[in-house]
Length: 446
Image 1 (cartoon, one colour):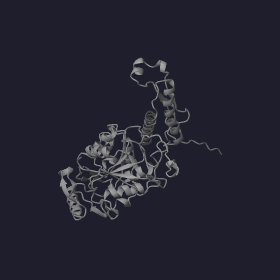
Image 2 (cartoon, rainbow, N blue to C red):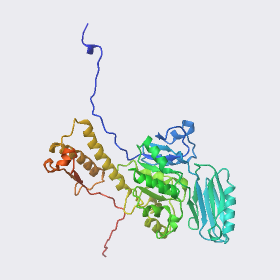
Image 3 (cartoon, rainbow, N blue to C red):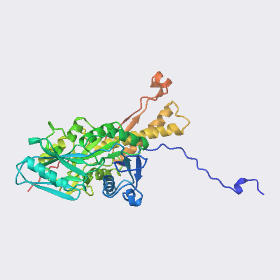
Image 4 (tube, rainbow, N blue to C red):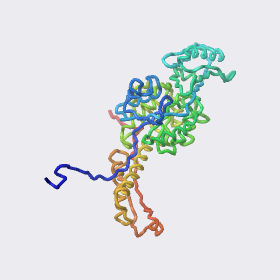
């Protein structure tokens, strides 16, 4: 009998260095008022996985399902979507106001699958009363009750959810003469986002079905310090009809506050989930390889806008979905902050994360990085790998090519060396950007 245990038991061990988990920049998070269970976050690889018939929490009419469906409907689409459970549910309210009083006008609104059309009148009180009657005729199926608010020239219709967390599929069919604003009070969105992120922070882009001005502003404030981004769709008509100067809508508010991680996009229909489709269309692309302008989103219809309305949107850094040359596509590709493009923010986040991960990886997997010129060369090498990858994907220009410099150890302050602080490391790169507007001049001779 052999005394060699290898004759009867063969053990093969692969020695592998521990890796640093990489931050992802292609995963959206959709907020939910209908999720159940103790988990704050669930991950789905298809919209069908969300349905009750497949063991999920949702029906085909729930806003979370509609948003996730829009994400997965794009080509290419993200490989997974996370759904974050809200604990503090919003009680949705909408205000409908008549911008003009015209006896020949037709004021149209779609709620769910039902279209409501008001015959024009020169009497505001008559229009308000008619609107209330038509909306309440849909109750309880709509889940919302209509009442009046204001008086005289300010009288308008208010739609209020019968239960917290209810979502209203509403579309303004007459945005030139009828105003719709979502005025839902913020129930504590920042608190919910913090709790969701504590449980699972492996997501990058926030999608929220309850985008009132109050909620958007609060969520944008949280996102600004979280290293993530937020695409907020708004149906608020003042965004398109009010000039930027003196306006108070959510787009101009975020623009004035220089929110550099929130992109607002206007659409007439709350249930189009243009924001979700837009994110789903672009997030699968490598950071730095894309622009968020010119994107043809599967699902939503283009918004018909006047030249003045486009001017108002652009002055507020608000994106929109319009038809040009027979194609429906997104405009702008920008965050609310002036001259801040979504692709640049995402790419810089990617560069930052990859440099941090690369350096942390060698710190964790080597016995040590010596405080020597050779140690600084190791760090330089990790940074240059990321810079080169940035050029390859198209985020950095190759001319001039990015480069990194590190100091000679002999030139570093003694206090930094004693404290083991590796200072003086710098890199230089130029963003490649993208062409959004092209001017061509030609001369034709006879």
